Length: 345
Ligand SMILES: [Mg+2]
Image (cartoon, rainbow, N blue to C red):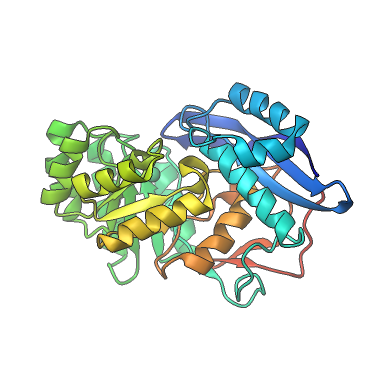
């Protein structure tokens, strides 16, 4: 018989986190514990991580479902349809996988979990004023990143182009790969001309130039863009295989970005990745403000399944009350250091 419990954790940002969904000071996760009643010392752990206004589910919905889950975990894991609750699906999947593998938080044993090989990640530059962003970019480059991701669409387009030009003046394409993320900021009518301007700066790619849900406009952009487009928010809420195929075959993006907490977990990420590869669409993985429990599962899965492209896995440092874990960033790589113990939860 399965037993379960959950605990709410409010992560506090080290600095006001400027995101596409406004400025965040804190965000909620729920830690799930699951164990067999006969062996109560082996406890699987998972994280249900929500981003306000981006996750399809609300914390009220999640708390109701979690209360149902702890009443009867066996029924819940075998019969509950969770396709509209991707964060819960991911947290539950992780907790069950951890339980199955002996509750060591080693879900996918590899050279990564042995601490021998790291995962190359991009340095994420948070939104801010031009001066703040410039300072943050310099810090990333100094700490060893060769791929940085910059959120655009926050300050004026003109200022952003100036900022990117400045970076390109100091660092060539062989020094720094630059990815930008518009988070849907461009209007469809102006998007192509903006992509043309951006492409002059030798960028790697742009995430979600226009808002999701405009498949025909996005298809047109992907067919004509001089700058490769990566779909991100577009994948959220597309929970059925048929619909996923339809999306990929209609829009034909250059890349897709897999965020397990937002698209239904690791198995769903695997499905997306296979559907994409079959259609010559490349992909990378990005965490979505999970704490280290969620990030750990994503990182291990990414190492086992991902490409050698830089991944978006560096968000763990933004919280003042993250869970102490073996995850650490050295230079531009995320490592799992087995010498460091997990904090008890
Ligand atoms: Mg994005």
